[in-house]
Image (cartoon, rainbow, N blue to C red; front, top):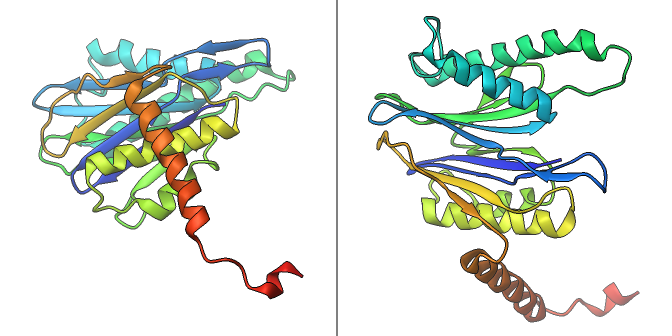
Length: 244
């Protein structure tokens, strides 16, 4: 399992992914699930993946191999919608190729992708690609998507995140949602890969990897936990009828 979250906000885009994969309690490994394609000054496209690792790696590998080809690829498509269609088609291609090899073995080849970025003068956009290759786009009313183990971090995002939320605050919100998820589910773990993109910059950020012991991450998570405990203690006492 994994956990990825992406946000499309008024100021830009935020992406955070964990890096844990596991095939049982005795086989835990680390793989990057945040992938960057871009041409500085022209476009940035970010992919996040969750699900079958072999499928997602094949999709990413094909997308990278085809950057130097003559056909459509992520460095020459005209807009994000075309880019997402290309990722979805590549996903279906991989599934069709590998399905016969696993026939009757009860292997789930499915995976999901979040794809966001900006191409040229088009506004930043964010899409959620389902395992079947079809997709939906974020809106101002729904400015974020999650894939993977999403339920533990979702309440924090639903309460605190709006389209107008500043990027720094949105990043803090995303990191706290990861802290809550990691505390509740062993299949999500460090390190975390994050990338923040400022609207209309058309830069290709280097991103940042949050490793175990990261001072800032541990600091805000500790502050969040202490604040919750303090607030809980300050809430009004329940009426006598609640005590039954």
